[in-house]
Structure formats: structure tokens, C-alpha cells
Image (tube, rainbow over all chains, first blue to last red; front, side):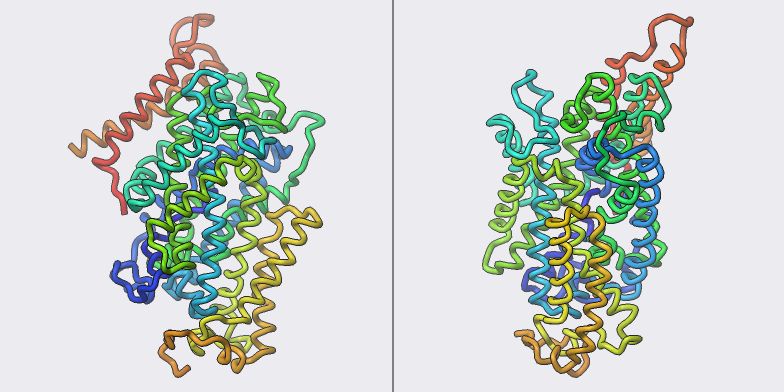
Length: 487
Length: 69
């Protein structure tokens, strides 16, 4: 699932700091010119690498804990990941290739710069918790290097730190990630690129060794939960989880920032590399690791076993290296981008201070295993909060003319904070959070209805309030007219 | 140099997956080499050792030939 980081730090930097015009060649505030467009090969490798993250080692076993059955895991994940690819291809890539703008600049034209800053804050905080989960997963790979019992590993039931040694492990790994993030993440991005094919094979090797030790190739039988296992995730839940675990990226349009460089919308098919190798295969391989421990060592699936111990047991130090690298290469840029988001909120703060702040929040989140152990819920909430913005962009791009509302209203009016967008975003998210908290609705069911409700509300409110209200909103202090049209 | 690095990289990837695959086949269908009933050719220790060596070889070779866009 990696919620990753591929929209380019420079692009984010250009959007959250005060330097308006592109000086980095990333075209943050202009359409990407034809000479900068890239062919599909650039996207296939990127998606394959970015979606093979340390958290995949958690998600597979969490499916086992939740009592996912063989049909759900084999067919449900196939359907859900296919739907995610189709969303990338026909929504995100289509809009990206027609607009050729970053999410942040497109959003600024619709919602105003003030709302972009608010979005960045939400994004930054969610990034911190996500990076925290990656720190948790990576820290489990430290334990096997020490004598048994030195570091007490967390289980699915752990919410608090398991002891001083665990805290030290998380701080050490998180501090290393933050220090590298301070220096920019070019090197780590390169390591991630090199590591992608190798990591994929390590996942498959884990599965082969596990099948060998279990003495069967009957995947269907192995993935069938033992009688009496509580079933807390349905087929539909598995489909929705795999469809929306990256909802912020496809439905939420964060990947506009990447796919705007694509020559054709068909580059959206490249997401299949991430979904079917990084998610589908990796999750099933990771699930098999816990199934082995349940069947051979009698581990309770509700308690689970930490990824480091399971991977070390299966393929040794190469596996531990994989856990650390998979967590590191995705957490590091995540910390970097969270820092940029905080800097956008507090422009007086230096980049170093902002990154340190983000790193500290990530480490704090990583120390508490509650975030990693509730990853299935967390990614649903993440999508529910951020995906609705994509609903507004879809309306603006495809429907605005048809329903009689202005395109890029904030750019036309010079508004810095489009209240219509804010209300359209806030109301569905608030209702969704209530459904999740009070009614116990599975979080992955919520991103799509939230995005649709947000889009519909945006149409209704825009029609109801009319251009005068938008024009009367808080004016962009810079008085910038982003369209070139008369305000 | 680039060609050598590429060959090392491919061998390293093979070293990552082939031992595990051999372990899998031998566990299910007996030793691939030698008479039936003899010890498996590829033990888990061998799998782990070859995979670690392959990991080192992969990261040493990949920067010399893999293109990063």
C-alpha cells in the first residue's frame, strides 16, 4: 500500500513554500511542456517500486487476523486491485494528461491557496502516522539481530510500547530516517528504485519457503481460515480495501502530480505493476508467513507475530534487509513531505526545523504499535479524508460546464479560500467519521461515498451560492489571477 | 563494466529466487538431485546464505547498470 511519495518533493516544495514560480524544472505552477513528457516505461518501474513497502508485511498478516477467506484473498484482491488500476487509468491519468498540473496547483485554482494549506496539514499529519507505521515495521527487523528476549516485539494486540528496548529501536530507526530526510531523499529514492525487483523476489521467496515448510502447494486450502476463526472482513471489505487503500492517490488525485508528465493517459495502466506485484502478490506472500506460524507453532492469529521474526525465520538476513529497506525507502520521503506540509502551515519555520518536527511526530507514532496494528482501518480513514478533494476535481474537470458552474472558480475570482469547497469537503468527511466511529462502518467503505457526496455537494452549493459568493470570498492576498481571465 | 554488472545483477536476482524455489520443489517432491530418500540438496540454511550473498551482489551491481528516470 505505500502511500507513497512519488509526486516529487520538489513539486510539493514549490506548492507549499512561498516561491511561486518554477525554478526547479518541475513545472509546479504551469502546464508541463511537451518536451518534458515521459514515456510509459518511466511509470511502470516507479509504480512497481513505490507500492512495495514495509507495510505490505503487516497487511497480509492482518488479513489473516481478520479471518479473510481464500476466495476473498485470491478473487477479492484481484477485483479490488483491478478497480484501483481502472480508477488510475480512466480518472487520474485522463485528468492529469488533459490538465497537466499538480494536484496542489489545480486545487489552488478551484479552492484557493488557504485551503491548499489546510489540505497540506491534513496530508502532513496522515503522512506522519503512515511513516510511523513503517518505522514500527522496520523496528521489528532489529529484534532478530539480538539475543531472543532482548527486544519484546509487538503483537496485533499491542497499542503501547513494549519496553525500553523497543522504544530505543524505534528512535534509532526513526532518527536515521529523519536525518536522511534532512539531506533530501534523492539517494534513498535511488536505493528504492534499485531495491524494487529484489524486494519483490524476496516476498515470493518467503512464500515459496513457507509453502515448502508446510509441505503443500494448495494455496486455496492454506488461505482458508480454521473453523471458529472470527470473520471480521467480508469479500466486499477486501475488494474495497484493495481498491481504496491508495484512494488519496487515485480517487483523491494526488497522482496528478506524477501522471501530468505522461505522454498519454494509457500511462495510468502502469499502476498495475504496483497493484498486482506490490499489493496482490506481496500481501498473499506476507499472509502465508503468518499462516505458517499459526499452523506450525500454534500462534493465535488474533495475536499474530511481528514481521521481522517471521521473515528472518523464513529467509534469514536477506529478509530482514528487505523489511528495513522497504520501510526506509518509503518512510524517508514521507517524512520529508510531511515536513514540507508543516512548513507550508508555518512559513516562518525552516525546512530543517519542519522536517525535524515531522520526524519527531513520526517516531512518536512509530513507538506506539497501535497505528501499524490498525493499518487496515487507518488507510481507509486516510482515503476518506483526502479522496473527497478528488470528487471536486472530477466535477470541475468533467461536469462544470454541463451543470453550469464555473471551472477553476478561485482562480477566476482571486479567492484564497473557497468556502463552498471547504463545506463540500468537511460535511461528507464529518458524516463518514461519524459512521466509522459511532456506527462501526469499515473505513474502506467510506472513501467512494465521501468523494461522490463531496462532488454532488460542491455542485449544489456552487449552483446555490452562485459566482457572486465565490467572488466575495476572502481574496487572495497576492491578488493573483491564476487563469489570466478578468477576476 | 556495465555488462559485467548486468550479469552479476541477473545472477543475484536468480540467487534470490532459485534457492527458495528449489527448496519448495524438494520439500514437496523430494530431492531433485540424488536418489529418492536422500537428504534434500537445498536446505533452509543454504537458502538463507545464498539469498544474503545475492542481496549484497544485487546492491553492488545494480547502480552500475539500472537506469533511474
